Amino acid sequence: MSKRDYYEVLGVDKNASPEEVKKSFRKLAREYHPDVNKAANAEEKFKEVKEAYDVLSDEQKRGVYDQYGHVDPNQGMGGGGFGGQDMGGFGDIFDMFFGGGGGGRRNPNAPQRGNDLQYSMTIEFKEAIFGKELDINIPRTENCDKCHGSGAKPGTKPETCTVCKGSGQQEVIQNTAFGRIVNRRVCSGCNGQGQIIKEKCTECHGAGKVKKQRKIHVKIPAGVDEGAQLRVSGEGEAGTKGGPPGDLFIVLRVKSHDFFEREGDDVFCEVPLTFAQAALGVEIEIPTLTEKVKLKIPAGTQTGTYFRLKGKGVPRLRGFGQGDQQVKVVVVTPTKLTDDQKELLRQFSGDNGEDSSEHHESIFERMKKAFLGD
Image 1 (cartoon, rainbow, N blue to C red):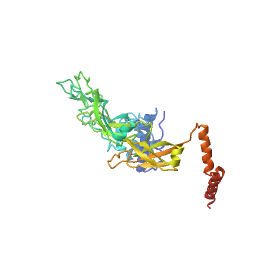
Image 2 (cartoon, helix red, strand yellow):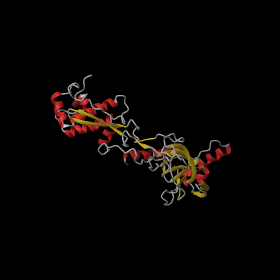
Image 3 (tube, rainbow, N blue to C red):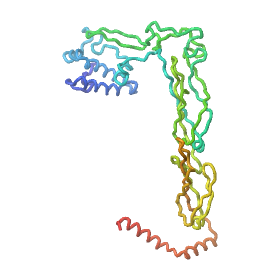
Image 4 (cartoon, rainbow, N blue to C red):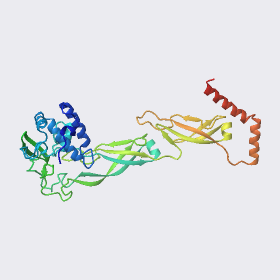
C-alpha cells in the first residue's frame, strides 16, 4: 500500500513553517494517541502522524522528501526509508509534547506514591446535621509483611536487571542515511521494572503487595451535605519502592427525612392547620432538629405563610453559628363535615358578608390593572 503524502497527513501545505508543522502534529497526536483514543485504528493513525512529523520537522529530511518523495526502502534507507524506524515509545512522544519535559522516562526504581481510593458512604439525615464517628472496612493493597514490599523471599533481595542495567528500558539503535536513530523500549528482561526477583516471596508471590481489609476510624463533621467529600490522608493504596501511600476519599450520600428538608444551612418543614386555627390564631408545638418549641400563629394566617425559627437549622461547617428553620403552614380543608358543621360554615359565610363573585371580580380588576399599567 502506498504511503500518503506527509503534508496531507499533517494537514499543512508545503510552505508551512516549522511552528505550523509542530502545532498540527501536537493536535493530531493528542487526537490519535492510544492512551486517549480507543478506536481500533488510532494506533496506526498515530504512527502515521508521528512518521510524517519526524520527516517534516527535520530540515534535512524535509529537503530530501520534498525532492524525492517517499524513498524506496531498497535504496539505502536502512530498511524502511522515512518510515523504517520502530514507531514504539508512545509514552515518550506524548510526554514530550504534553508536559513530559523532553520525553524522559521515570526511573523504575524511584519511590512511587500509591493510588488514591474512593469510598461511598450513606448516612442518615441527622447524622449529616450533627456529625458522627464510626469505623469502616476498606479493601486495599498493602505492602507484604513477610517481604516488606520487596517481593523477594526473606533473606534475599531483587537483583538489578543485567539487560537494561536497572533503567527499565532497552535502546534499539538503527543507522540510516540521515544518521543514527535511537528507539527506547520497555526492557524485555524485567518488563520495565529495572530489577529481577529470582526467589519470590511465598506470601505475595513476588508482587510485594497483598490485598487486605483495613478498619479505619472516620470522623464525619457536623453540617456536611449530600456529595461532601472527606479526605483521610495516607489511607489509600500502598506506595512502591518506599513511596508514600495514597489517600482515601469518602463521598457522602445523605438519606432524606420524613419531616425535614434541607437547603444549605436552613431546614424546612410543613405544619398543617385547621381552618379555625388559621382564622382564630393558635399556639402550636413544632419539632426542631433538637427539641420541640412553641410557635404562635396569629389570627388570619393564610396558607403558605412561612415562620422563621432563628438558629434552629444546620450547624455551619466552619463553626460560625447555625442556619434557621423555616416553618410553612398549610391550611387543611376538611373533607368530611356533619350537617351542623356545614350549616355553621354557611352562616359564617353569610355573616361575614363575603360575596365570592365580588371577590373574584376584584382579583380580575387587579390583574387587569397590572397588565395595562394602571
